[in-house]
Length: 189
Image (cartoon, rainbow, N blue to C red; front, side, top):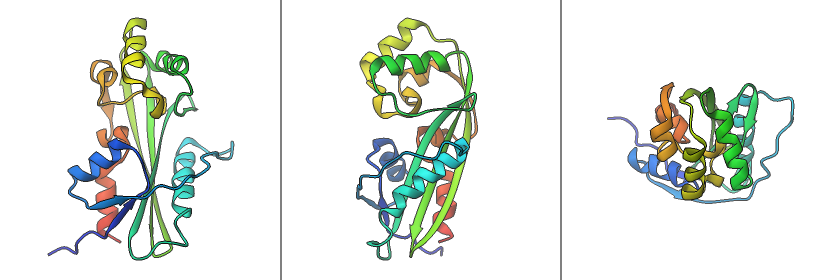
């Protein structure tokens, strides 16, 4: 019989990450700490996601016992430009227009802090959006208020359901947590 997975502290208020862990039958509790999510300009998108996920974990390093702290950061990247969370509904519309009819990358950096050791990994998925109408974009932003989502959209919401033609890579990575890689990493702790 495999060793049971360690106890998890999820350092995220994302309901999507919480739901993914529940669907994986992973017991966890949520502990939040404020962290500055700025990063050096010279980092690649993959490095940015890992850098921020690691900063989030470092906030727990002195106070953690035997539990594993799980932190993550998801970014959307198009033509080398990182699209974070939109600041306003108008900014969300602008981002979605930029993604419309194009391919972009979704990168999630994950950090597992266990016994003062940092286990870091990331996943990249390519997302192919069909050309969206202005009305589809504005009605989505008005109804779903995607200000808490990198790139201004949730794949599991209307714009993702009607706009995404295909994905190369992990679906759950686009949701916000590469569950396949996460499970393997947790088993190996």
